[in-house]
Length: 135
Image (tube, rainbow, N blue to C red; front, side, top):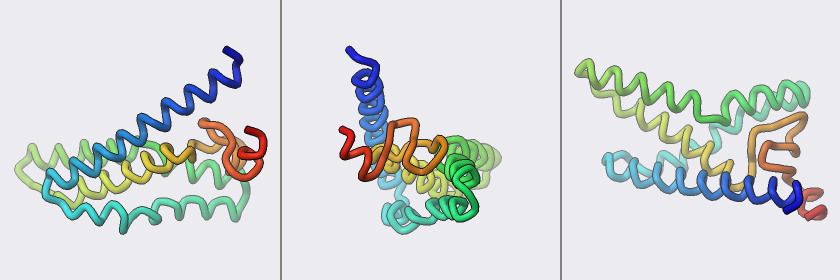
């Protein structure tokens, strides 16, 4: 197996697992009795981080990557669990984390990975017209 083929298969696995994560989040939100439509309503909010590209490709990638990973949603869930263990239920905190993680999962499932040196180069491979033409 060539290096290119191997990298493409690894990216495919990551895209599939992120698709599964997105589906799991939808099911968990519904099972928790939360309004599932918030996942869609809040979806584009997280893409505001791409405005950093107006400054420079480096700033854009930095801001995009800071928002498009699972760290912050995981921290929000830990904070939510802490409040819950303390006897205070703040469901909006868990729903915010779910919306954020859902956005990351859908982006990754669609091939929008963490940015390298510009928007088109990601850890999942190139995106855009050139990537399609090169395949």
